[in-house]
Image (cartoon, rainbow, N blue to C red; front, side):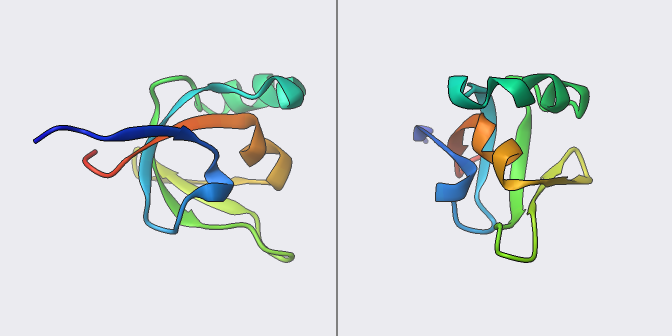
Amino acid sequence: MMQQTRTTYLRELPIGAKGYIVGYDKIFRGYQGKLLSMGLTPGTEFILVRQASIYWPVMIEVKGNLIKLQKPEADALCIEENEYL
């Protein structure tokens, strides 16, 4: 079966979507160091657990760990959605 991928941002994914990190948005480059320290490096696979709202941050699962991201941190990640991870 052929894998279908699409470069996008976390804010565009539905809850439960799977994907992996491909890089960082230049506009939010100041967050790159923090994201790297969290282990969110290119190639890292994740599952979107919760989308951002007024009261809640974005939450992703990476290697069995839940990671909370504030909206600017989440927007700094360039990702590819992949439903076959």
